[in-house]
Image: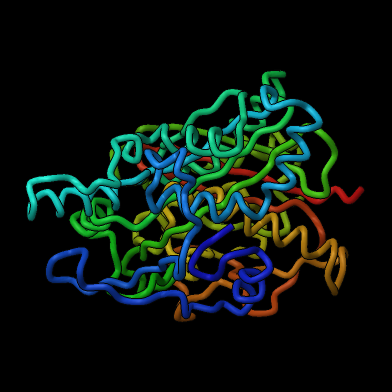
Length: 390
């Protein structure tokens, strides 16, 4: 994992629990006439190998930064089952758009594209192709682009590839990078706040964009953390606005519980989609009230890393994975989960119902945890993760 909080899970975890918002900064060079808060990854990123120079863009460099952290584990699995039995499913919504923007600006000035630009950087499918070629994997490789649910759906697809026998393991996750096209688009939709996003607040004014990558190695065998349930829906209510009833979100959450063979009362923490927009927060909270008789502790982590768009579902599943994994190996131990706090101005919107927003230092008993991802066009995906210590 790599995002505005850090470059590895070990670096990110303490800053996540501390509700560290120092990764945000302002830029006034993306949207004309606006100074916007963004959550960008700082520092140098890995160099793309020369043999893969056609994939050399910021989006793939972010992916490479995440892959470095699990590359040895992937190599072990390849040695055990063979490269042809390891697939790749990646999510993205921006691919190499930021590099294309730079190339086009260069062309306006010089009448030529930059030497480093290649159309493969722009292809949505290029994200998965890059990972497969970088790691030498020969199984199915494809990219999912369903807006903000892309990363969650990539994990769902990875589980499906394994369950139907096409793969023994899948490298799955998502990456998105800040670009002018997306930022101006959200600005035109009046969905971006002039301040850092304030989810579930009576004063919320919109989202804040971020970037990053989160990648998993999904395997068939036993592991300490299990993807126990997946729920998906696609109601197609509107191209950019959520269904105000929250029906699609409700179906995704209920589907994930059925798939996991769990009751709503078994969920001990809920990672909200929580964009901080007026419509999304209202829709999600209405759906939550119908699913849960008693709402578990919940929080939106987008106020710490921004809305990482296509990467958000994988990023937030990664945060949930960290909650469970740290409980297995760190004090206070497997009896309790340390929860990411809900960072906002503290003024809960009473219209959102009885939310139990996690405060700093909040804990929950060991149990299953849920993560919501709801995208444009009504593409909804909910994941349920569970610790199963060996």
